[in-house]
Image (cartoon, rainbow, N blue to C red; front, side):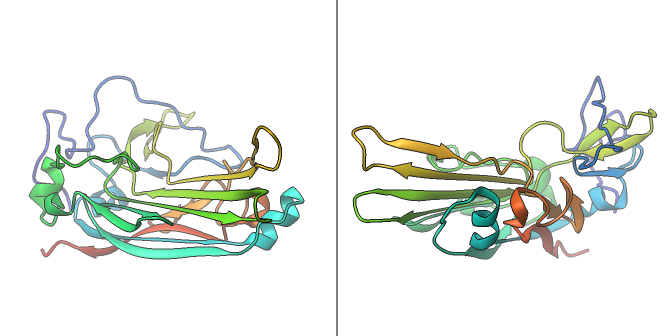
Length: 240
């Protein structure tokens, strides 16, 4: 479906951009998410987003794969799945539970999606809304009492693609800059010493899936396969 709202470059808003088109290396071992298509008319995958009413966010973290990769002892698997309206962001914290942001301003019509209103009075301390919708899930696990804890924090986003080009100058649509589809942060904090010792783990290439298209090598490839599932998909569309 081609959106009824277009700018003077005949590009469906809000995906329109002006000026320089960023080059995406589609020949890389793990190229960033992209779909071929002319910048003047979005391809079907991108047009699909213009009619997306709800998104499904799902992830599965495999502790054994993480421990094998880093020689560690993360205590257990973590998984979660939820459905968000377009224009809604969810944050799950061990202390406060599941919180939903911008629910009163959710984009439950296509016009609202194009207008992209947010609640200016809502304090988004824990989640900075990006893209069309998103989930942030954070949890803490203590290891030996008084010795420290593990911090697990994952964000899944339904990004807005924008026009780009490949090395041959062919047009495509991709995610340029932040946000990425998945951002996973894992820390081990040792508090048994006078000053906490914080160890960070490189999980920047864990892989994900957006609209059934693999990103950064696909599922479970990076970081020892610790994320066998990290996907963002369209759950429902607006009525025709």
